[in-house]
Image (cartoon, rainbow, N blue to C red; front, side, top):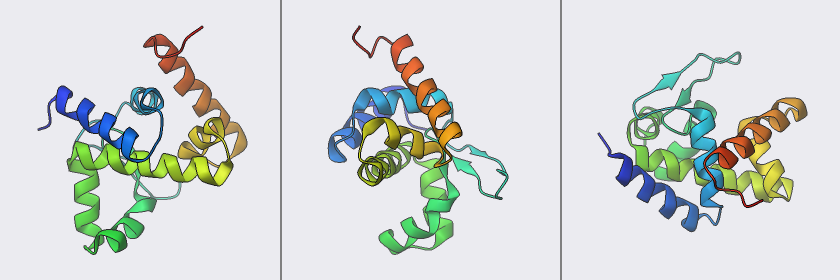
Length: 137
């Protein structure tokens, strides 16, 4: 089991590696509320959300190809290795920021490309960041 301190170190390293704001990663983790070893679902589309950052299993086939492992191994790593989970989440967030052209929309699309759902999610992440004192006023 990974300690909170080790998971925090992984989150900071992932944020730096993928050039995403660490406070946003913390906000996402707070909103998602997952933990190592967790698989939540099934979602309406039959997928599951894995680990601390609740990475959707839609990403597993792509990760398996990138890592040259079976989908079962990729899923196991994302669900059960907190450090892998936060790195995958930062990698996804970076992709969404690039796709949408801005941080707010990237956060929204981390959760859902459906405008209302994504916007509500991004607002929740911002509120979580604010509660943690990660936003300057």
